[in-house]
Length: 573
Image: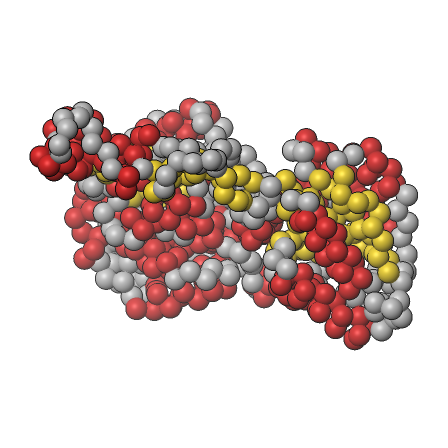
């Protein structure tokens, strides 16, 4: 990753990457609530500690959150002990009651419910969030609802400990910038430039250009500029857009490198001779963002999106309510009976606010007065076991090497699935039809033997494969399993259901089979193993309601990792 040299905030003793970290922290210290916060991706250690230690420069009290934090701690709630003792309702104050800098530990494990509540809190500019993301893999990441609301992103993975010197933020400079950044003028065309760059990078959220504009103001204030300049806009785009990019505009790859900046104006302090930010070519800002892109980031983002698309319903099977096993849920009103257990704490909570009133009207003196309407029962959520249905293209279009990679990827994934006690089924399609090579099983040895004997050649009977996958999925669901399809192919359908060649009819039948799969409510992922992404497969995945993941020139290991990520939910629950 290329660091951002900054004439004001970068110090000579800092490495470029560490200077980038310091610049981001100083910007956050100027306007924490306006920028939303910081997504900090790093494993726990002294390098991350050096960054979190600098959060004391924020003008907000720092409060730490855990992913398992409940609503009562977040929003406040009933103080049961005090309420029972005093006979009146006593409430506690939640963490969101006062403006604060919320530090979310293990942010990659943040459940969807907590992410939604924090996102709602960030929509009101009172808090900022520092999300400590310790994810080891690309699919382990901060929930999208939170990532979209945080202007800044830093990854410390490539920063060695020797470079992580103590971060001494200039508090005087921060205070001056805080007093004046909202007064700085932003050229009108800066918004047009940033919006255009965001669209070119595949960023669909309008929060990104808005946050970049806000950050450009902060940077201009930190640098002592009289107004927002071109370098402020460019730096803001680097910090806000790089981790949000979902694609790289192909046309930009053929563009000549941008001209070198005019060094004669470097000493200009009033900005009179500098170009207006609105005159910055979008290509110049794009190149700046490209320099900040981590290696293989777009691949990682594609895998993470596929994981989000299939998450929740596929990782450990479908969720279903239970009465005695599984993950605890909030209690609900009801009476204990066969299979329904009383939640004593929740019952006492429901009864506590009414104790004073009930004591006055009660015929008997009791320590606690409980009515039938106070009763609460426990609830749990269980998950079914999962069956992975691999449909592997063994046609002639899948070259020998590609088929070997697909086999290797399936074997690697099978080994991991076996460790999780998943079931596995294997369908091969080639020639005139599809064949169920392996019914749902947990036998790794049997699966490897069947894969080794899988020949290649012939046409691509895609509709037959999808029909067989659905038949297999329906039988699996009847046994209480959650079916998930992993379709590995590099081409379009060209063999009809009756075994006759013909692309038009074969594709029409494949669409019909795909719609039937979607109507049945099954999940899946389509892995495009062709050398170039196929628009036909992308459209088919949309019809299936499945995630689409193009992986050209991928090895067996990379294929298996991508499948693993796409089939594993980002967050439990």
